[in-house]
Each structure stands twice: as C-alpha cells, then as structure tokens.
Length: 108
Image (cartoon, rainbow, N blue to C red; front, top):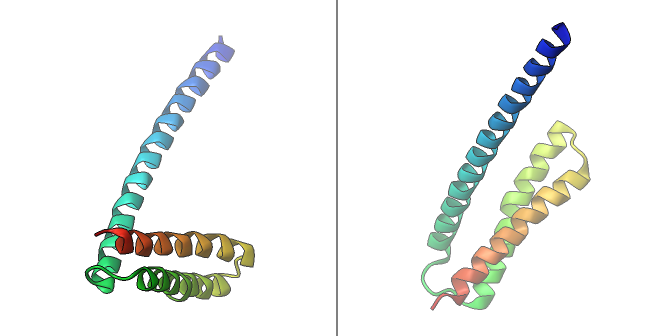
C-alpha cells in the first residue's frame, strides 16, 4: 500500500514540476521578447531615420562587439567563467545587433 502512495506522490510531483517548468519557460520567453524589443527600439533611436546599409551593419557590429560582448567578457573574467561561454553569449548578441542594424537599414 505504501508503494502505491509513493507512486501517486511521485506522479503528482512530476505534474507540478512540468507545470512550473512551462510557466517559467513562458515567462522567460516573454521577458526576453520585451527586452529584445526595447533593445531594438533604443538602437533604432541611436541609428536615426533611414540609416545606410554600412551604418546599420557597422553600428550593429560595433554595438554587439564593444558594448555587449565587451561587457559580458568583463563580467565573465571576474566570475572566472570559461572563455567559450563568453564567445557563445557574445556571438549571439553580435549577430542580434547586426541583424537589428540590417533591418533598420532595409526599412524604407
């Protein structure tokens, strides 16, 4: 009888943990979307109206490399995180800002 009770408790705990995981995942995705939108909006204010292709790509690469990746690298150095992690996280933001700059350059 005790084994059946334990099994039911384990199943209930798994259900709760999947529900919690789903809620956390949705919240993280939503917050990430809002933060990316705000970053794009502020970067667009920085670029101005109708930036050239060179300005969009160059400013996006510069912002990604020097502002974001440089800041991440500084934090990772003090936290003694692996350099590969810095390359992965910094690379994501470099690509993100280059694509944001490209999209602003392509908007008529």
